[in-house]
Image 1 (cartoon, rainbow, N blue to C red):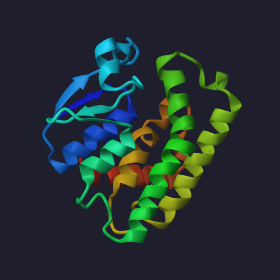
Image 2 (image 1 turned 90 degrees about the vertical axis):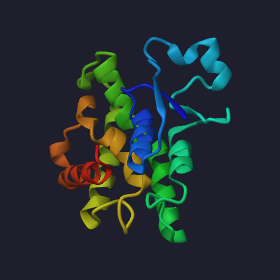
Image 3 (image 1 turned 30 degrees about the horizontal axis):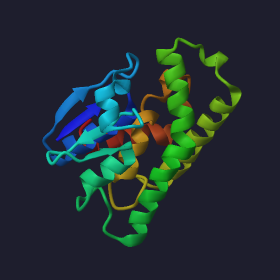
Length: 192
């Protein structure tokens, strides 16, 4: 299997961490999004959306979108709860991550770290919703060691990717003590 990903992207790192945690062999193909490497004709033939991560399986099939990829890779593993309700809660977090967390925390990080904007120049809505997302995570991790009872799951993989670097977007993680503990516990559980 080949993983096409950009090492600066939390969405790409989710896939790498999942594969590493599960001992899945792969070749990493660094695909620099800032240089337009996901917009070349060859890449677009593989993934018309022009986005990383994308995996190319040994049989020639491709799969994109980070949470779809990690679900595929982790099928049948301990990262996906066997209990139907716990599995659904994990999925709830995966959907929430892409809709209510990543568009704010990751976007702020990208604008500050890679586009050189000041955190004070970010759109107020991005900052407000980023803090709302971190507050929700803080409340959830105050009650449980991981996001889904029973151990580390794909919910933790998905949400740690950008949460652990939220400070790079101007978010002060000292305000979220339960999140800081959850980051440490999740990094230890995943070996990252």
